Length: 197
Picture 1 (cartoon, helix red, strand yellow):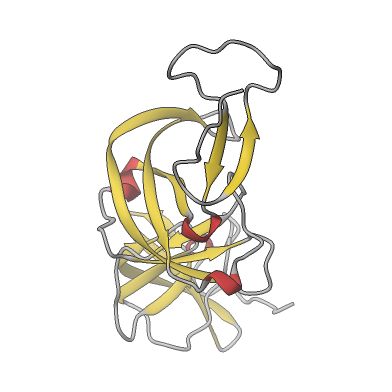
Picture 2 (cartoon, rainbow, N blue to C red):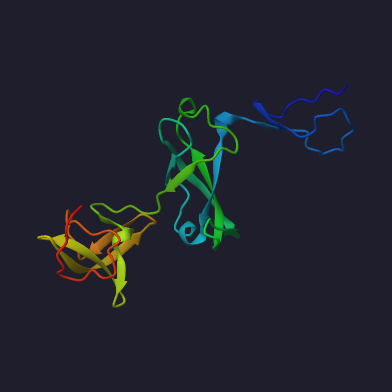
């Protein structure tokens, strides 16, 4: 019997050769990992990845623990690949490597190949006026929203400085605190009376 010494301290994740047999040199027989030194591999749309920089803050959610975790972007890989979305659309994506910053005690149950959700900060804007992207629509080659003033819908042209999948930062055309209509119906027009539900 040949005794094989582990190259690193850690736990066994997978055993690829379970039976007693002759193996060729270089054959993987098991996988070992130090779970205190995990990194996250996330795929991102290339249109978003070009705005990501090493060191950018990352919020890790949906991993099953009681608190969100913190991390930073280590690297955005230069090679892209095509992936089919849940809606059947071909998307160009690339991998983003994320370092975990939260203490090991907060994430000790997190393991190899676990599912997580990440939010990567690509920009920061102080005193931004944010609206849900569902409130925005195009009209006459510009962005618009419907605001609610004195029980009536008021059409407002706005300029957008940044936009994510959930919210957009308005740089001009809207004041803080003004309510907007999300997903306005196509028949809604300026000055129409509305009722809040």
